[in-house]
Length: 76
Image (cartoon, rainbow, N blue to C red):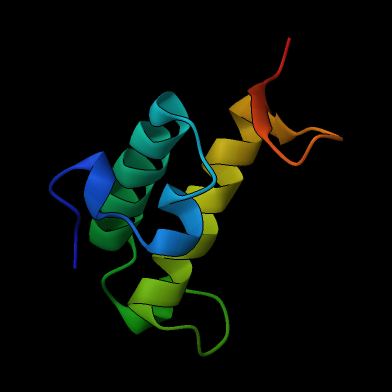
């Protein structure tokens, strides 16, 4: 189920990520949703949704890191 806006992503991501990171998450999830629609395109027995969330978090982690303060910050 692709997301229409960055505020539609799961609470577990929406509540901890800054706005730009939420946008990255949404875009990466939606892209993975389209790309990995066939089970053979995914690793193991992961569902389309599980794969989308994994890709989305990896996309966020490429641009942001979780600081010692518990907040997500852009990588320098």
